[in-house]
Amino acid sequence: MTLLEARGLTYSYPGEVLALNSLSLKVTRGRRLAILGPNGAGKTTLLLHLNGTLRPGSGQVFLDGAAVSYSRAGLSAWRRKVGLVLQDAEDQLFAASVAEDVSFGPLNLGLSEQEAHLRVEETLAALNIAGLAERPPHMLSFGQKKRVAIAGAVAMRPDVLLMDEPTAGLDEHGTAHLLATLEKLEEAGTTLVFATHDVDLAYSFADEVALFGDGKVLAQGEAAHVLSDWTLLKQSRLKIPLILGLGLKARACGLLSNEAALPRSRRDIEILLEQAAAVIEGRSVPMRLK
Amino acid sequence: MLSAGGIQVRTVMPIADRVANLNRWRRKSLIEKATLALGMLALALLLPPFPAAPVIAAIMTGAALIGARAPAKAWLALAAAPLGFLFAGAAVLTVQIDAGGLSLAPNGFAVAAALIARSIAGLTCLLFLALTTPVTDLVAGLRRLGLPVEVTEVALLTYRFLFLLADTAMAMDAAQAARLGHDGFERRLRSLGLLAANLLPRAMDRARRMEIGLAARGWEGEMRVLPQQAKLSVIGLTAVLAVEAATAAIGVFLS
Image 1 (cartoon, rainbow over the protein chains, first blue to last red):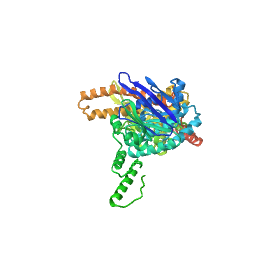
Image 2 (image 1 turned 60 degrees about the vertical axis):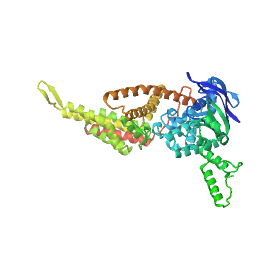
Image 3 (image 1 turned 90 degrees about the vertical axis):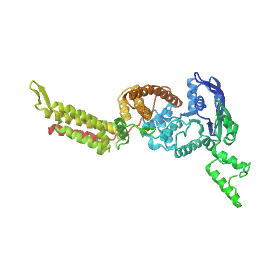
Image 4 (image 1 turned 90 degrees about the horizontal axis):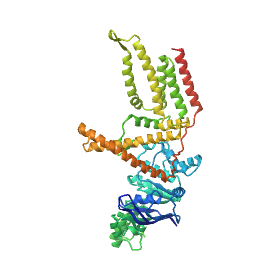
């Protein structure tokens, strides 16, 4: 089911060439979508269109199949369903403490103080930051700020959560931690959409990839499918994800049959190597990677 | 951490803020802490300075360092500047200038001692408040006392942005220094001018992005958040009042 759709969006900043050039994109319920493109491609501009912050010069955005309205009430309804997390968490945290900041959205939804309080507690617990509730934002680490910024959006229980470069600047541990948290949110029914320039992240984490180039979505589809298209990747100035590249190479060498699923994680590659070693030694091993 | 890009903001305000947020009495109700600090301050001003002032100073320093476990280093860092002014100012009281020139003032030492004792007592009260109660709690308290929400909102946002601005300024300053922008007085002045000029557009930019972020969370002009309220402990408040009554008694009857 399509939750959010952009059709033929065109937008240009004053005095600039087109940032978006008849761009179309679909967000399907329950499908993790990575909007993938290099720096300056217009990913943030697109996200700002998807929650109504920017209004396209031409084209239209559809929410649950209906064209959106940019009236006050329309925007309010839109933002109840579609949450946005900015790239720089610092831009989002304004309140005196973490708990206060996270309570901002729920109170704007019109929840009572008691309900909002519950919502804050649940959200902080879900993101593993309950211990930070009373901290002021300037006493948080970079990774903690990121989580708090996400909590601020998540506390509103949006259908779709748009995130701008959610892992940018996080170390590996922080990234793994964040992705695990996002998976939990997804299980609770939130559809995840994130903009990134990281092809490896897009390949390993997203179900679907929308490849960005020249202000439009060059292709949207299964991650492995889109990301193995050399021509498209070149056009959007990106490289093939490492693991996917290795998988394709294994296929080309006959280590992996054409029907077998391509590896998606480091572990998959390790299994593939074990199989290769077994083939060399002439042992037969159970084919674990089918 | 009070850092952006690894640059620590080293001024007195962040020290106070840090301790205020992490001390053992952080969660005690504002009413208890404010009653203690402001009540003792009033006693320090009203009672004859001896023996009340030393008693108050001892109690309030003990409350901050032993009760709330504020680090003595932070306490000293905050006390240093006012104490410096105080001693310099009090020294002047011990002398007088008249037709005969400079001479020791009659009673000069007694007056100076009274001033110093009273000021230190007052200072310990305010230090206690500053080190146990975050600014945000104080502002929330003022709101409950009837300060309009528009004022408190601006106060809190200003407070929040002070840290961001300081971080940005420190980062820019370090970047300038790394490119030799601080070599020589003239260049230093020029760098400072550039820094000041660039802070404003950056601040505007940030404000604009923050507006986007707030709007995404349904902001329509009013910044409503759930205030945190500590439970008022009747025992705590009674203890505070008892200490104050005892201090007042000592101050009145032993003077």
